[in-house]
Length: 403
Image (cartoon, rainbow, N blue to C red; front, side):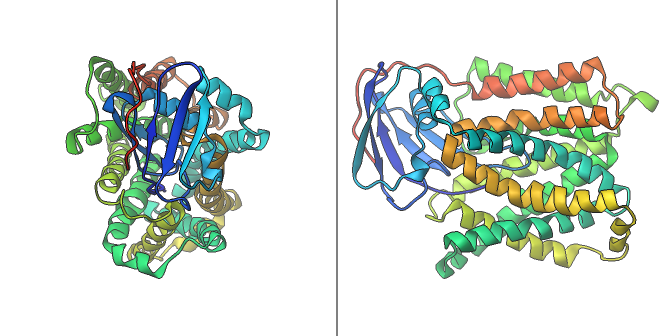
């Protein structure tokens, strides 16, 4: 479930070793580093920052400002309540400095999150042998909603005045939960779970393309074009549409995985366009989004045959405990935790784990492995890295601090 939050702040930075960085947060009570933000640094450069997560795709769309990206990774400021201005030294290697400060518990949570999201595909595969994809999604969202709601109530982030934004919550509940989950459940039912998991690694590629087309905020350069081409080449190698018969994949399965990726990518674009200024905590947004998705699915799901999931204890526990309670609900809590401990930028690197975990699980359950699959998955992950790779920029001074 993408966590769509908003914090407005500006950063003025001088890209020098041990430079002085000044941070101003407009809303002192907001959690830092968990949502859309506009950053301004030396030379008037501006970056948009968005963090979200979904089945292992807890990544940011960060445009420009590599010094600021490093600065965000070096902060654990979501744990701070800041008023006015705060100054701190910026190390020459912020990523290395940040890694030294990460608590062991955050590392354990990080690894657990990659394992949880990567295992979702085999749970969907097992459940699909007994019930329909829409029934899988309904049960997943039903059992995944409770941990999110419990955390939201505990933190007291839900407000009655938020409900005036319900049309936005409704759109997000469709794009980022109901349709996205359904497409992936349907695609996984038609494909080996390892293949579905590997294809899911391409979500950042679709997000980048949609952002570039509709928001005009992505800077297009040769490096990013190469990354997109490389990533989609990996998708093509996995789909292998030229293969027929026993060696081929169901094209409908591949199509559903692409539909799910497009749906989630569209949700990021919609959120940045219409929801980045709502001043609502990301936990509250996720609660409204998933709650509405649960209502939609409760109305749309046919209940005939739903009890068939009880015919297999493995499939039932995998769906309820693995896919729902853990893979949806607890996974969000873990992601929320590592964003607080590690910063949103480093938390986003969990994106790279689920496709690898899904592939390994597929091998363990006997789905087999082709050398071409490894090459294709590597091409996707390298393409995503090339797109998201920070660009070193030279700054000549410190800009004004602005909201």
